[in-house]
Each structure stands twice: as structure tokens, then as C-alpha cells.
Amino acid sequence: MPYSIEEHKHRFSAWAASRAASVKGSRFSVEIGNKILGRSGLPRLIENPDMLPDAENVDENHRLWRQ
Image 1 (cartoon, rainbow, N blue to C red):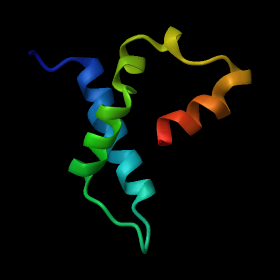
Image 2 (spheres, rainbow, N blue to C red; image 1 turned 30 degrees about the horizontal axis):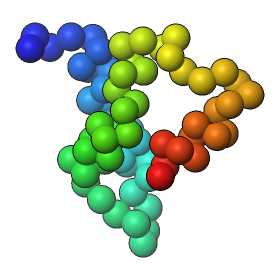
Image 3 (cartoon, rainbow, N blue to C red; image 1 turned 180 degrees about the vertical axis):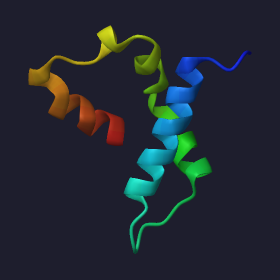
Image 4 (tube, rainbow, N blue to C red; image 1 turned 90 degrees about the vertical axis):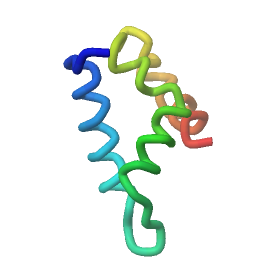
């Protein structure tokens, strides 16, 4: 697969999320963060942001993504 802007966004997002979530007492690598994001299904949203939940449903969706 060629390196696309979507792939770049995903890699950057995985790095940023992993660094932000990796705080004292809860450390994990970018590789683990990337796996978490991949299993959550969030990479689909990078390619199609129209799939994001409505503002009224963000909290519920965020709870489901964390599970």
C-alpha cells in the first residue's frame, strides 16, 4: 500500500494519542497505542470523517471507544 495522507494522519494520531495517554502510572509504547486505536475502529474515521458521531452522541461514542 502506498504511503497516503490518511496513513500519515493515522500514524501521527497514534503517536500523539499514545504520548498524551502515557502518563505516570499508565505508560505504554506508541506501538501499543497504535494497536488500541486500530482495534477501536477509529482509523476508518480518518478516511471518512462523515462517520463521526453527532455532537449530541460524542460522549456515548467516546465511552464505547474506550471500552
